[in-house]
Length: 82
Image (cartoon, rainbow, N blue to C red; front, side, top):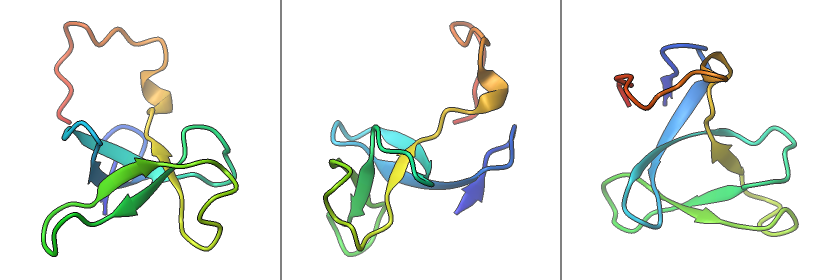
């Protein structure tokens, strides 16, 4: 686990279904865009799998991290370290 360099939120890094690295944060009661983590290989990052809110009740759920500090920030030309 790492922390967002801007807002300090605890992040978990995973691989998307399209093989891209993505920062995730705990869902904390949110019901949209939920993901659970699965390991493709014994070693290496977990894969984030999209699920519905009623599925996998006993597992932690995550959402894609959208930093509140970045709201309204144009990232088209900005260098973002992740």
